[in-house]
Length: 182
Image (cartoon, rainbow, N blue to C red; front, side, top):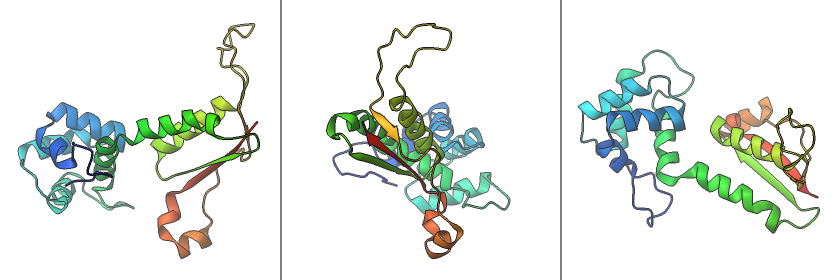
């Protein structure tokens, strides 16, 4: 139960699973995994501590999340823990904010996201950076001074075709967005 992208990071998934309160765990599972059964899973985790392996955790989650699902019952839980351990959404935000500064005019930025949290964040950022004013609609004259730094190349997200998914099943949830530096 590690899930760190780097040994330099101190917190592991085992630390989170075995030390967070039930409320903190439920919040991680809900916020980063969008897991509808987050409270029940958190309650079960706390009751069965310490958990040492991913198999133990997956089996435990499976006792809470029953029924036939398109994905493994523990997928959202593992996603939530991985995102939390690696602070993935904050890192994505940092990378996106730095992009206009490192791209020259005509340079392109491409994002591929594999779950809705990442895609929502990328979509929001692409939109924000492709418009001149961020003022609320009720403000008659722009006071923010924001200027577009990007031109959207893809108006809509690009998703894999059925043929691509047949060749590469892991691509099924991929969403691609492209923009060009103005």
